[in-house]
Amino acid sequence: QVQLQESGPGLVKPSQTLSLTCTVSGDSVSSIGHYWTWIRQYPGKGLEWIGYIYYSGSTHYNPSLRSRITVSVDTSENQFSLELSSVTAADTAVYYCARGTRQWLGEYFDYWGQGLLVTVSS
Amino acid sequence: DIQMTQSPSTLSASVGDRVTITCRASQSISVWLAWYQQKPGKAPKLLIYKASTLQSGVPSRFSGSGSGTEFTLTISSLQPDDFATYYCQQYNEQRSNSYSTFGGGTKVDIK
Image (cartoon, rainbow over all chains, first blue to last red; front, top):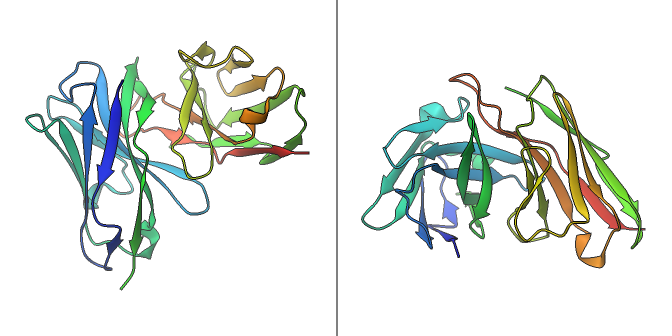
């Protein structure tokens, strides 16, 4: 059974960097065909794809966030991480990590973490 | 980016009803569409991928159809466990700058 679990602070101050980690069990972050992804959901319910990392280290980011994002992977710990810099109140959301399964040129998300509410406030 | 528009945004129905939710893409995405169910306080759950392929373990009362720009999710006989919010997601990432996008959601509540 594949499981993902987000961890990190629930409160971040404006202009600081949001740092989250996703721990994967039941699968390897080195598995072929799976793209380890971050998605967020705003309080009003909209879902936004943030970006992914593949085991090879290749990344793909949402163009609207590209200048502020870094996604990295730690194969020894079977984890992947998100850093989002210069946060504002608009970055307040529930952050999910998910496993993307590749079909042709894109991915659908078959396993998700439970989600972590991150609030940006002073 | 490809915009996904779901309708209706809210749907009131009764147990046993046949329910249909529509998702339209701003440009053709072939069959690269997934459907998710989300309950309050929980992560989305994958129901269908590649427009019509049922994810393992998902009840057969759920079905998906469509291609190109118009897609539907149908629940053949609504059950109490099905009252939730449903989202579509396109994953037709043909260009290097393209990425996955979600519809705005359809809340199915009790009539």
